[in-house]
Image 1 (cartoon, rainbow, N blue to C red):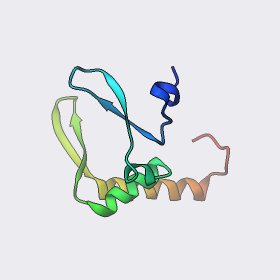
Image 2: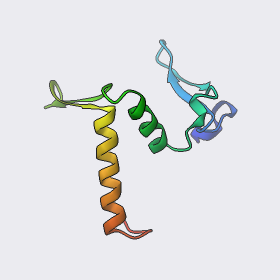
Image 3: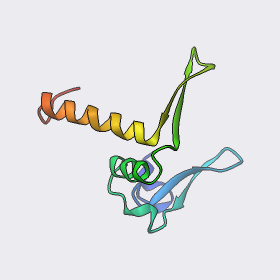
Image 4: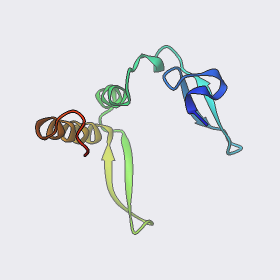
Length: 95
């Protein structure tokens, strides 16, 4: 199926949510949520608002807590990777 056609919403106007019964559904995005034009834009905005918020906890061997990554750190790392790719690749290159 195409996510953009589920329940008549496009990916930019709805949020995919998991209900307590385990099923997924689309929730219509509020104007506040819908202001982002890309995932990168949303991450940067959230990192600016709450840079110390935990984004990920990596597990060692799938079970033991390892490194934590905050929204600010994730944004910084994502931007560093993007800068590297822009400096070393051209449009259309496989990375």
